[in-house]
Image 1 (cartoon, rainbow, N blue to C red):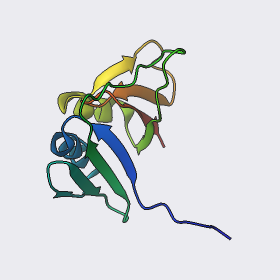
Image 2: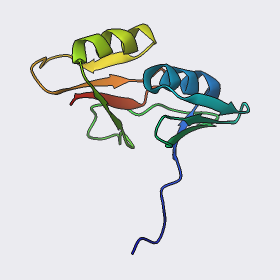
Image 3: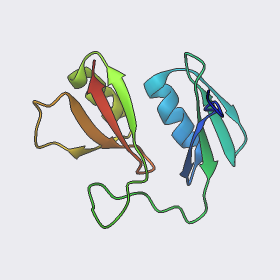
Length: 119
């Protein structure tokens, strides 16, 4: 029997509203909250939250001596089309060497790594 249920995944960042808007453009859903804490209510009932973190330092990827902290895997139908859209929204490609893989790695505008994964 489970002890708890996952409520939200929370990302520290310098500008919660801006990062919530980025992920809302990628995932859909509605953005709610004030300047220090913003929730993205994604389709399917999941919440991705964004918390203001003064002095935020983005993770480094790949860097064995620096933790990436975590990353999000986002499933897409068409890697090329999804890549074009997330880059236009401000994502930065982090790994462009092997285009034959079923995933691609990016940094969101605050520097958190995420993957677009072909379904």
